[in-house]
Image (cartoon, rainbow, N blue to C red; front, top):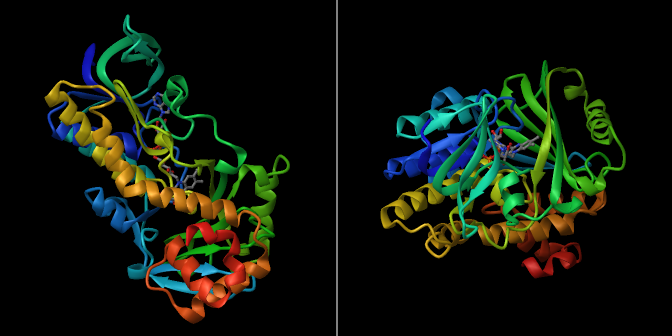
Length: 397
Ligand SMILES: Cc1cc2nc3c(=O)[nH]c(=O)nc-3n(C[C@H](O)[C@H](O)[C@H](O)COP(=O)(O)OP(=O)(O)OC[C@H]3O[C@@H](n4cnc5c(N)ncnc54)[C@H](O)[C@@H]3O)c2cc1C
């Protein structure tokens, strides 16, 4: 590890590694620092990744991390009625179920092969500032040794609890409605349709969220629940809800748990700014996760590609100002911002829907059909048949 880089990227999740790849490809001298001793582990993810998003982000698809290719998605109402959406119509939500640890490791490997350096067991402990208060590097703890690394740019790709976001003031604390708490079991001996990801809408078991089944093979799947923090009333609540739902589903209840994961997902509005002089935020740290699905891999990689290219351009221009970094700011907002806002508003409006409304929504969508599943199209279709159901969503249509 040197004492000076063009860019130090904090966090070797998908957003950090993918940013590093494009920056290195463009000729920048890049260091990725990761506080864990191994990239990608432990996994905190249901492992669904949208094929189109990965393609748009130019992620190199490696069969090693493709656990399964999905034919589509099913949205299941509390009364058991369901809507089947094939992959072509499933918009940005369906495609692969991945091996998330291998996925993250592969992205990091590609970045290193393109010229980035990776330091493990290397935590960012603070930001370095010059005499004018401008960011000029990071303080790190690398395997117990405190060090300072100077860099022209610092990239916060340090996940939903981003310290970089907090230290800079770019990412304010999330409201309880804007963070999903997730709990997931990897289960085997299940009786499942392994070619479809399934989303269960149920106000009884997943108020302000949903339950998912993401298949890993013929009889193994990630079975999880994500609900907003504001709906969690006591310790152990999330587990009670997930266990209660599983007990109500005989084909799932027969299964056995082989792994447990938990974690938070930011589902707030986009930040006012993801850049300042000498610094950019990307991925969960930059609040680019979809507020309806909680999916952050695809969006993070799409934004990371632009972030990495912006690093390379800034190095060539020798300009690391907030003004120059607008290339990233306008670029990622062009492809993600409108959808993030719309889905955040939809998430807010969905928080208190009851089972009766979920039943009507799924039945209506099934009867009418839908060209491509996204929040806007769903609302337009429902409005035609049941305008009363979408009164709350008028602003979105
Ligand atoms: C239960 C659950 C299920 C999910 N399911 C899905 C899903 O199916 N599909 C999907 O698309 N998304 C899903 N997500 C969200 C997805 O996991 C995140 O959006 C994604 O990981 C964000 O990538 P990232 O690179 O921004 O951040 P992360 O993957 O969180 O990576 C951040 C990295 O930064 C490192 N780091 C943090 N602080 C420091 C520091 N100070 N110094 C050095 N390193 C640091 C961390 O160790 C970590 O490796 C899920 C999340 C949860 C919790």
